[in-house]
Image 1 (spheres, one colour):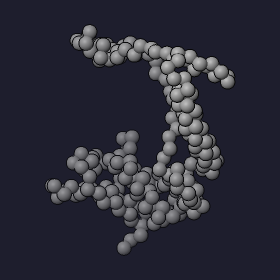
Image 2 (cartoon, one colour):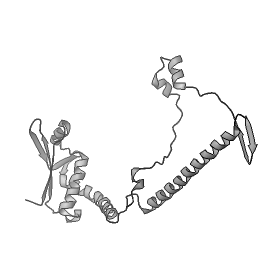
Image 3 (cartoon, helix red, strand yellow):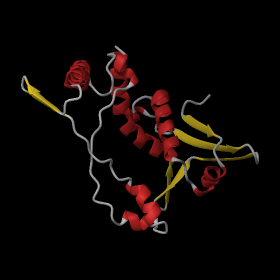
Image 4 (cartoon, rainbow, N blue to C red):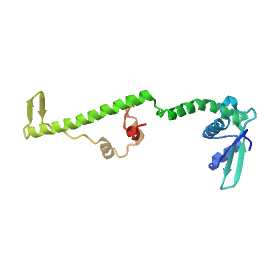
Length: 208
Protein backbone atom coordinates (compact mmCIF):
# COMPACT_ATOMS: atom_id res chain seq x y z
CA UNK A 1 0.00 0.00 0.00
CA UNK A 2 1.41 3.35 -1.08
CA UNK A 3 0.75 6.07 1.47
CA UNK A 4 1.55 8.77 -1.07
CA UNK A 5 -1.55 8.04 -3.15
CA UNK A 6 -5.05 8.82 -1.94
CA UNK A 7 -8.08 7.59 -3.86
CA UNK A 8 -11.74 8.46 -3.46
CA UNK A 9 -14.18 5.97 -5.01
CA UNK A 10 -17.75 7.11 -5.68
CA UNK A 11 -20.80 5.71 -7.46
CA UNK A 12 -22.55 8.97 -8.47
CA UNK A 13 -25.39 9.70 -10.84
CA UNK A 14 -24.99 9.58 -14.61
CA UNK A 15 -24.24 13.31 -15.09
CA UNK A 16 -21.67 13.51 -12.29
CA UNK A 17 -20.04 10.36 -13.63
CA UNK A 18 -19.88 11.83 -17.15
CA UNK A 19 -18.32 15.04 -15.79
CA UNK A 20 -15.16 13.10 -14.92
CA UNK A 21 -14.27 13.01 -18.62
CA UNK A 22 -14.45 16.83 -18.57
CA UNK A 23 -12.03 17.06 -15.67
CA UNK A 24 -14.70 17.91 -13.11
CA UNK A 25 -14.91 16.75 -9.50
CA UNK A 26 -17.86 17.83 -7.29
CA UNK A 27 -16.60 20.38 -4.72
CA UNK A 28 -17.94 18.39 -1.77
CA UNK A 29 -15.86 15.39 -2.84
CA UNK A 30 -12.76 17.57 -2.85
CA UNK A 31 -13.58 18.58 0.73
CA UNK A 32 -13.86 14.90 1.68
CA UNK A 33 -10.52 14.14 0.02
CA UNK A 34 -8.90 17.12 1.74
CA UNK A 35 -10.07 15.74 5.08
CA UNK A 36 -8.65 12.33 4.19
CA UNK A 37 -5.37 14.01 3.23
CA UNK A 38 -5.21 15.66 6.65
CA UNK A 39 -5.87 12.29 8.28
CA UNK A 40 -3.26 10.45 6.20
CA UNK A 41 -0.56 13.08 5.76
CA UNK A 42 -1.16 15.58 8.56
CA UNK A 43 -0.66 19.33 8.15
CA UNK A 44 -0.72 20.47 4.48
CA UNK A 45 2.87 21.74 4.84
CA UNK A 46 3.93 18.17 5.61
CA UNK A 47 2.24 16.46 2.68
CA UNK A 48 4.67 14.43 0.52
CA UNK A 49 5.96 16.41 -2.46
CA UNK A 50 5.01 13.51 -4.72
CA UNK A 51 1.59 12.93 -3.13
CA UNK A 52 -1.26 12.24 -5.55
CA UNK A 53 -5.02 12.30 -5.31
CA UNK A 54 -7.25 10.19 -7.54
CA UNK A 55 -11.00 10.63 -7.91
CA UNK A 56 -12.50 7.36 -9.13
CA UNK A 57 -16.07 7.22 -10.41
CA UNK A 58 -17.95 4.00 -11.08
CA UNK A 59 -21.36 3.79 -12.76
CA UNK A 60 -22.92 0.42 -11.79
CA UNK A 61 -25.66 0.53 -14.43
CA UNK A 62 -23.14 0.66 -17.29
CA UNK A 63 -20.21 -0.89 -15.39
CA UNK A 64 -18.14 2.06 -16.57
CA UNK A 65 -15.27 3.38 -14.48
CA UNK A 66 -13.49 6.70 -14.92
CA UNK A 67 -10.76 8.31 -12.86
CA UNK A 68 -8.64 11.43 -12.85
CA UNK A 69 -5.87 13.08 -10.90
CA UNK A 70 -5.93 16.35 -12.85
CA UNK A 71 -8.83 18.79 -12.54
CA UNK A 72 -9.86 21.37 -15.11
CA UNK A 73 -9.97 24.82 -13.52
CA UNK A 74 -10.21 28.09 -15.45
CA UNK A 75 -9.27 26.42 -18.72
CA UNK A 76 -6.18 24.75 -17.23
CA UNK A 77 -5.55 21.33 -15.75
CA UNK A 78 -4.07 21.31 -12.27
CA UNK A 79 -3.25 18.38 -9.98
CA UNK A 80 -6.21 17.27 -7.91
CA UNK A 81 -3.91 17.04 -4.90
CA UNK A 82 -3.19 20.79 -5.24
CA UNK A 83 -6.90 21.54 -4.88
CA UNK A 84 -7.06 19.12 -1.97
CA UNK A 85 -4.16 20.90 -0.25
CA UNK A 86 -5.69 24.36 -0.76
CA UNK A 87 -9.00 23.11 0.65
CA UNK A 88 -7.19 21.40 3.54
CA UNK A 89 -5.59 24.71 4.57
CA UNK A 90 -9.06 26.26 4.88
CA UNK A 91 -10.52 23.18 6.52
CA UNK A 92 -7.83 22.59 9.16
CA UNK A 93 -8.63 25.58 11.46
CA UNK A 94 -12.31 24.62 11.45
CA UNK A 95 -11.49 21.01 12.29
CA UNK A 96 -9.16 22.11 15.10
CA UNK A 97 -11.87 24.36 16.55
CA UNK A 98 -14.42 21.56 16.25
CA UNK A 99 -12.19 19.05 18.06
CA UNK A 100 -11.34 21.59 20.76
CA UNK A 101 -15.08 22.07 21.35
CA UNK A 102 -15.57 18.29 21.50
CA UNK A 103 -12.69 17.87 23.96
CA UNK A 104 -13.93 20.68 26.20
CA UNK A 105 -17.59 19.67 25.76
CA UNK A 106 -18.40 23.11 24.39
CA UNK A 107 -21.10 23.55 21.78
CA UNK A 108 -19.99 25.35 18.57
CA UNK A 109 -22.06 28.41 19.50
CA UNK A 110 -19.61 29.19 22.33
CA UNK A 111 -19.82 29.78 26.09
CA UNK A 112 -21.15 33.36 25.82
CA UNK A 113 -24.05 32.21 23.65
CA UNK A 114 -24.81 29.32 26.01
CA UNK A 115 -24.95 31.72 28.97
CA UNK A 116 -27.24 34.12 27.10
CA UNK A 117 -29.47 31.25 25.96
CA UNK A 118 -29.69 29.89 29.51
CA UNK A 119 -30.69 33.33 30.81
CA UNK A 120 -33.30 33.71 28.05
CA UNK A 121 -34.86 30.32 28.81
CA UNK A 122 -34.97 31.05 32.54
CA UNK A 123 -36.70 34.40 31.98
CA UNK A 124 -39.05 32.84 29.43
CA UNK A 125 -40.08 30.24 32.02
CA UNK A 126 -40.72 32.98 34.57
CA UNK A 127 -42.80 34.80 31.96
CA UNK A 128 -44.80 31.65 31.16
CA UNK A 129 -45.52 31.15 34.85
CA UNK A 130 -46.56 34.81 35.16
CA UNK A 131 -48.84 34.46 32.11
CA UNK A 132 -50.53 31.46 33.72
CA UNK A 133 -51.16 33.41 36.91
CA UNK A 134 -52.28 36.46 34.90
CA UNK A 135 -54.79 34.37 32.93
CA UNK A 136 -56.19 32.96 36.17
CA UNK A 137 -56.60 36.50 37.53
CA UNK A 138 -58.31 37.57 34.29
CA UNK A 139 -60.78 34.71 34.54
CA UNK A 140 -61.54 35.73 38.13
CA UNK A 141 -62.20 39.35 37.06
CA UNK A 142 -64.49 38.20 34.22
CA UNK A 143 -66.42 36.03 36.65
CA UNK A 144 -66.82 39.00 38.99
CA UNK A 145 -67.92 41.22 36.07
CA UNK A 146 -70.87 38.92 35.50
CA UNK A 147 -73.42 40.42 33.08
CA UNK A 148 -72.40 44.01 33.73
CA UNK A 149 -70.99 46.01 30.78
CA UNK A 150 -68.27 47.64 32.90
CA UNK A 151 -66.58 47.59 36.27
CA UNK A 152 -63.90 49.97 37.60
CA UNK A 153 -61.78 49.72 40.72
CA UNK A 154 -58.41 48.79 42.16
CA UNK A 155 -56.56 50.42 39.30
CA UNK A 156 -58.39 48.39 36.65
CA UNK A 157 -61.22 49.03 34.22
CA UNK A 158 -62.94 45.94 32.81
CA UNK A 159 -65.23 46.67 29.86
CA UNK A 160 -67.35 44.26 27.85
CA UNK A 161 -67.20 45.04 24.11
CA UNK A 162 -67.82 43.48 20.71
CA UNK A 163 -66.25 44.02 17.32
CA UNK A 164 -66.83 42.86 13.79
CA UNK A 165 -64.95 39.87 12.42
CA UNK A 166 -62.06 40.49 10.04
CA UNK A 167 -62.53 40.31 6.27
CA UNK A 168 -61.16 37.19 4.56
CA UNK A 169 -59.41 39.06 1.76
CA UNK A 170 -57.99 36.00 -0.05
CA UNK A 171 -61.50 34.52 -0.24
CA UNK A 172 -62.90 37.92 -1.28
CA UNK A 173 -60.45 38.12 -4.19
CA UNK A 174 -61.24 34.57 -5.31
CA UNK A 175 -64.97 35.32 -5.26
CA UNK A 176 -65.07 38.79 -6.81
CA UNK A 177 -62.00 38.52 -9.05
CA UNK A 178 -61.82 34.85 -10.05
CA UNK A 179 -59.71 35.55 -13.15
CA UNK A 180 -56.99 37.60 -11.48
CA UNK A 181 -53.53 36.05 -11.74
CA UNK A 182 -51.06 35.51 -8.92
CA UNK A 183 -48.46 37.83 -10.47
CA UNK A 184 -51.05 40.63 -10.60
CA UNK A 185 -51.68 40.22 -6.89
CA UNK A 186 -47.94 40.15 -6.21
CA UNK A 187 -47.57 43.59 -7.83
CA UNK A 188 -49.52 45.04 -4.88
CA UNK A 189 -47.34 43.38 -2.25
CA UNK A 190 -45.61 45.82 0.10
CA UNK A 191 -41.87 45.79 0.72
CA UNK A 192 -40.74 42.79 2.75
CA UNK A 193 -39.49 43.06 6.32
CA UNK A 194 -36.92 41.12 8.30
CA UNK A 195 -37.66 39.50 11.62
CA UNK A 196 -35.81 37.33 14.10
CA UNK A 197 -37.57 34.46 15.83
CA UNK A 198 -36.36 32.56 18.89
CA UNK A 199 -37.65 29.04 19.47
CA UNK A 200 -36.74 26.25 21.84
CA UNK A 201 -34.81 23.30 20.41
CA UNK A 202 -34.43 19.73 21.61
CA UNK A 203 -31.01 20.54 23.06
CA UNK A 204 -32.58 22.99 25.53
CA UNK A 205 -32.92 20.09 27.97
CA UNK A 206 -29.45 18.68 27.20
CA UNK A 207 -26.71 19.45 29.68
CA UNK A 208 -23.11 18.82 28.66
